[in-house]
Image (tube, rainbow, N blue to C red; front, side):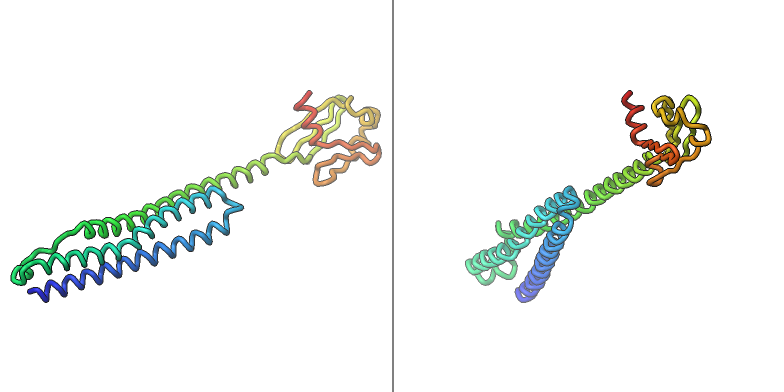
Length: 224
């Protein structure tokens, strides 16, 4: 009976040792991977790098706890062995396993180490997805803003009273023609002979040597 108990104890100890080794490998490997990740994104995505640092801190706690498991287990085994030596031989076979303080400690370290790794992974995954979602929304918003605001002229109308410019983004600017004396004095034919330079950033009348910038028009009409 004693031999069977001894073999069962050895089997459990072997399983626990393999679990501890697996925890060490997973935790240390995760820390190395996160450090490489931080080095790659530190200058570009500070918030994501900070989140990775928080994950490393939790993984570091898990690694420390995993390192404590084996020494605590050995201490438990030695204390339990001394306890058995003090018992009469006849009582050893029927004696239930004694749970020393080291037994509680190495089990606590094992479960807390697993919990630290799990919490770190949860924070990294959930926080990372949230930050990536925010970055995606920011890029989309920036792209929409850039598409929406385009101060290039696409259509120009000159009447006797006003100069009207229609922009690519759909806005219309209308200013008194008296702002531009050369256009006032010009014939309607010369007024209609204009060119859009720079894709519409400059309206140019070659016969009149007159230039008008839609951006300047926007500034002048917004600040009368």
